[in-house]
Image (cartoon, rainbow, N blue to C red; front, side, top):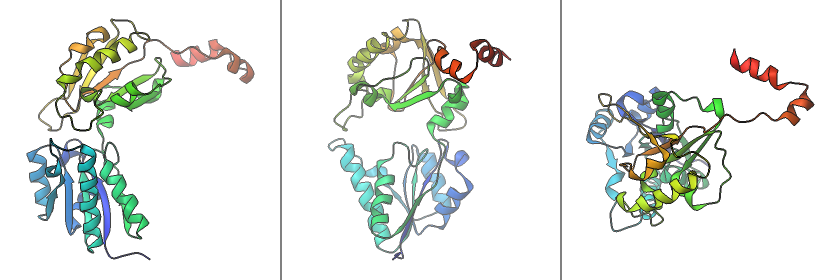
Amino acid sequence: MKHIGSLIVVGTGIQVAGDITVRARAQISQADIVFYVVPDKISKQWLGTLNSNLVDLSELYSEEKSRLVTYNEMTAAIVNAVKNGHRVCAAFYGHPGVFVYASHKAIEQLKELGYHAVMEPGISAEDCLFADVGIDPAKTGCLSMEATQFLFYKRNFDPHALIVLWQIGLIGDHTLKVSQTNQYHYSLEILTNYLLKYYPPQHQVIIYEAATIAILPARIEYRSLSDLPSANLTAISTLVIPPAHEAQLNGEILEKLGITETEIKKVLSE
């Protein structure tokens, strides 16, 4: 049995007024109430032109409590509004399903209760990265992961593929309370030393930050891997590690397929 209230979660994109999809904009305009998290005042003001009944979920953040507590409070606010019979839209910066705990939890809880709850896609920082830096992730393959998770867990990764590590400025944070990045330079040094086992010291990496306002450029800063610990990072900094070398062809597999390495290299060179 479906209930009266409903939820649609949308992404506002990175540049809120410019990246948002037609469907997402319509859902914001038509909702009874809009819960939102966006990065700046300009974005908030623009949302106000679409719907006057807005609730800023970012006001739930506090230095004194874990971000996980805040995320659960966001989830509860959204779910309760739907239970009260409202047509709810939750609008999150970027893609609403990427680094957004509350969007997934709210949909999960509401579906279990029999409510209509869905998510619309949005433009993420990763989409902007590929466009701004000029990288095709399909060319070499891509490992995309949160930086602290990459550091804390044993991972088999391929240095012949593109590596993208998100929230590099918060690396080493396990408290979910941190807002300052300077205290995590030691974790950055540990990460750098680990990466130097697979890449040469002068290997060029990229510090990337997507532009949230059209008049400002994206941050695309190239530096040597060995110089990474001295980088000035923010909470939205991303580390991009291009492949160190070209991957070797698997001669055994090619032989089974009746293909020669010369044929592969000829196709790739054309």
